[in-house]
Length: 200
Ligand SMILES: [Zn+2]
Image (cartoon, rainbow, N blue to C red):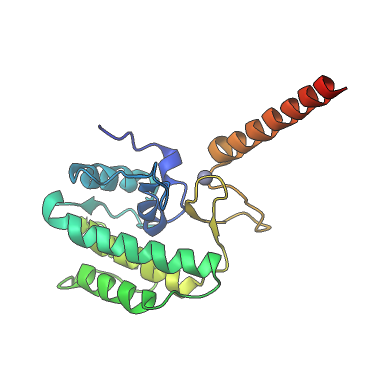
């Protein structure tokens, strides 16, 4: 099935988290992986050039061969999810999570000499950057920023960065998860009113 890479699927706030969120309902039997088909990695990277333009400093991403890139992309993705999910939910890095992420990022950056420093960590715009290298830069930037603004959406379990001024964002995407919760609450309220009437 072809994935439609909409703005909602970039609700994570940074490339590394958007990528972590390509697994839907993680740890749930109904869950699935939007990168099951390797070609989706290339399509995701294409969409990320638009949705993460600011983070990437306008640099484009490239996926030369999605099949070849896939194992490393998935390893960086899973290492990212495990480390930051542990940081939010358990207040610590899970055992082995930090060396795993650093190793995965090192592999993503191996042989790249086209990255930048300071204000342009993703390097110059003139040439595209390999997706796995961009993922590594995004994850490492997040690591150095600390987990203070990281959240896990209580509805869908996605990781996201709370960029709101007063750090009060609850949902990955108010228009999707916030509304679903509101609808559920409304439904439960109606149900209890009906039960109340039936028991009266
Ligand atoms: Zn959500």
